[in-house]
Amino acid sequence: MKIFSGRSNPKLAEGICNYLRHPLGKIHLTNFPDGEIFCKIEENVRGHDIFLIQSTCQPVNESLMELLIMMECLRRASVKRISVVMPYYGYARQDRKDDGRVPITARLVADMLVTAGANRVLTMDLHAAQIEGFFNIPVDHLNAGMVLDHYFKSLNVPPEDLVVVSPDAGSIKRALKHQNRLGCALAIVDKRRSSAHDTKQANLTGASVDGKVAVLFDDMISTGGSICGAAQMVKDAGAAKVYVAATHGVLCGSAVEKLNAAPIEEVVLTDTIPLTPERTPNRVKVLSVARLLGEAIRRIHFNESVSCLFRDDLE
Ligand code: R5P
Image (tube, rainbow, N blue to C red; front, side, top):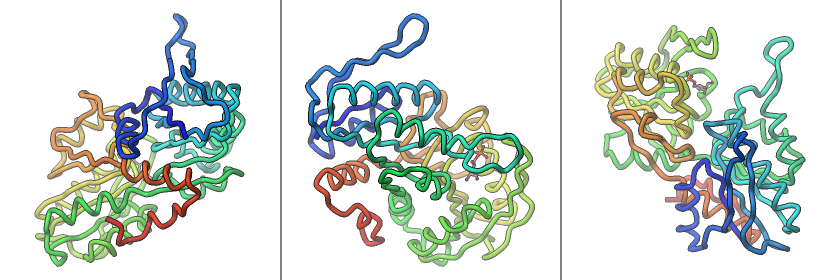
């Protein structure tokens, strides 16, 4: 087995290698003066089982292209198998034709990965689980739910004082899992999206949040519009404290300003996307998914079950 990483999330790659006690493979990545990417693998990879780590996060197109070029490079160097490890799968939100003359970029990315040489994919909290079906190669789809819930359990809020809040109808399934694990009540925000930048929160239904600690769970925080609007609604409904949690901290545009101004106790994210200083909210907690990804890599390499990583009792 050899593990390589692109330049999008080197800290997470280091965490994964530390967990596995396995060195990170040597790869030289640089840009030509015109911006094109150059890649050279600096060790023998012939016949090896390769795990290639790259979150296709900002700069999205650069990260994606770098991933494709690294695969092209590995394939031509006669590796046995390439497992692409994409902790964050960019372009996933365009996953269906919800209007005329629009692309399905999640599918396009899947096709590009396979064309470039991917034999399997390991990813985390896809925007829509159905994206797995865009691939004809095996996809292991992990979720960071247990990592987030483990943190909220450590806050020792009595379950009767805690309410899990789904920030929109599309997140109800995820919220139900959190509700089950945390053993508390559930409320749902009715969100209407008018554009990629604007959302409106219309109603709050389900359990009362009055005087409670509310935790909003989403797959990602992008512009922050959805989660900040929902946090405000929950606070206005009387919540004592509002936490927001998401696997992927995309945090683009004015997300950080919005999060800082919102009535939020803490923003809890994982490290699928690295936070740069300018993309770091004031009250943030970053939890690492390195152990989870590392264990999945180990299991894939040794042909062990990966689905058992979802067992609710796994610490
Ligand atoms: C929506 O379907 C997603 O689950 C997220 O709520 C959304 O993508 C977050 O985007 P933003 O932060 O820009 O509102």
